[in-house]
Structure formats: C-alpha cells, structure tokens
Image (cartoon, rainbow, N blue to C red; front, side, top):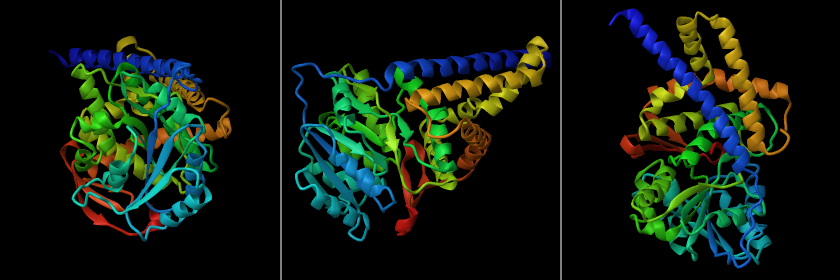
Length: 404
C-alpha cells in the first residue's frame, strides 16, 4: 500500500470522526433539553421512603456553612443527615455542631474518626461509620461543596423507581463571581456535560460520586461499601455494581437526575480547577485506557487541526476556512449546551464566556499531557501512587486545613 493510499484512509477516518463529534454535540443538547430541569410529580399513592444523607467533610471553606444549611431545609418527609469527619481537630466539627444546635428538629448525627484504617480511599474511610449507622435503605452521598435545592432530594427519590439502583446528578456549578467561576461553569456545562449526558443516554458508566442516591441492599449484595475502599475512583465502582447487576438480569439501572448538582465551594481558583482536572484525567486513563487517545481527539483545537488537513486531502478545501467554520459551529453548540445545563440566564456576559471558553479549550491538551506524565495523584491534602483499576497507595499526607 502506497503512502498516498495510507494518507487517504487516515483522512477518511478523521473526517468520519469529525462528523461523529457533531452528532455527539447535537445529541447531548437534545437529550439535555428533554431530561434536565423537568418538574417530576410522584404518583398519588407514592410513599416517600426514608433517606440517610452521608456528608463527608474535610476542612472549612467560606461557603461550607451555607452549603450544609441547605440540607436542613429539604422538602422531604423523612431523612437524616450523617456528618462524617475524619479527625477531631478538623475545624468542620465546629460548623456542624453550630448547625445541630440551630436545627434541633432535624435528625442529625456527627461521626468523628474513620472506621477503615487500612483503606486507601479517605472518602470511604470517612463515611464508613455513618454508612454503618444509617437507618434507611436509601443512601445519598453528597459532597461538602454542594448546595441543594429544597425539592432535589424529592426529585431524586421519584427517579429511583423499582428497577433503578442508583440516581446521580450531572456535575455543574452554582453562580459565583470571578474568572475561575466562569471557567468551571464553562467546563462543566460544555465538554464535561456533553460526554456525561451522552454516556448516560446510551447506558455507559459515567457517574461522579459527588451526589448519588443508591439502594444499600444493592451494594451489600456485591461486597459491601467497605469493598470500595481499595479504589481511588470509588464512584465508578459504586455505579459499576448497579451496571453489573443489570447485566446479570437483576433489573437494576442507573439514571441521571433532572437537576444538576450545584458545586458551590467558597475556595476556588484556576490552579485548583486545573489540579482537579489533572486528577480526573489520570483516573479516567486508568479506568478506560482508550481515553488517553480519544480525549485529545474530542477537543476543539486538535480535532479542528487534523480535520482541516483531512478535508484538504479529500476535497481540496481551504484548511484555514474550514478551521474557522469548525470553530464557529463548535463555539455556538457549546454555548447552546451551556444554556441548556444552566436552565436560565447565565450569570456572566458573552465576552466572559468567550474568554473562559478559549482559555479552557487552549489549555486542555496541556493538562492532559501533565496528567499522563506524572505518576503521582494529588487528592486534597494527600498524595498517592496510582495503579491498575485506580488502586492506589498513599505516600504523603499534609494537615493543612486551609489548603483543602
């Protein structure tokens, strides 16, 4: 086979991949408009079961008190909040005690100290005492940086039908000020939500554990909550339990909630965001190695450059004109998708969106390169060496509550 034939085949494959990205883009927008921000109503005879809410806490940020307080105002008939803190010296203890005194009529408990000293995953270790003491069959794991609307828990429970084992929320960001806030909202409302929505539409495991409601019995039938402690990507394996059970004809399914999860950490910056992305990229590469190749090819810049060469090779089109058209369409679809995820007007201007969009798109490949060239993984105040299936080994821990 000649070099000319090889280049022709490569160009055809690239051009086909370019069209596939547009299908993914448009499908995510359509599915998001159908799925998100819908008001669900329970059947007249529906009995809302009790829910145990597990809140893992580490350190304090400026919005922690306000975020936690939203869970005391949920419009739900029967729930308990189980706050789980690893160490007594953690300043989050005082925040929780203040809320417990302020809302004595809300059923709450505070657990201090991890129950699994040998586990590598600090979140599972932190939550284990609360999980053991949970009174209800339905468990909601909700990260400390989230704030919740009054009807969100009710909506998630309605989604948890008889054949559903887990309901999770699409990660998104609440309205905050500053360029770092714009950057986070742009990422979670475009590139991340595009893949997240499509994966959940076709039934691929793409679940983040920041807010997920599941049946305790399903987890117990598959090794128990403690078994997740060997993995750093415990959310993937938690949802995999339901996917595996579904494939074994037990009938369990995984559904995404109609309301996105509102991340509202009071401590945020460009550096914090980028470190988080590096950690997520690294974990994804160990879970699905093909993402090392596929993720860069799904980004606007690299896909646009190689597609411009491909159309020049196939049709003798101007690569510059093609790249400009490619950029314009990609930009407009991303903006439409972000508006779909937001569900209302954006808290920033179109100029802010352009700046945030360009910054994220132009730095994404660099973050992927950094993620794949460093073996260690940093998670809050801990550092790990990561291995196959995200089984890790902790190599460093720093007690710096202002850094978490």
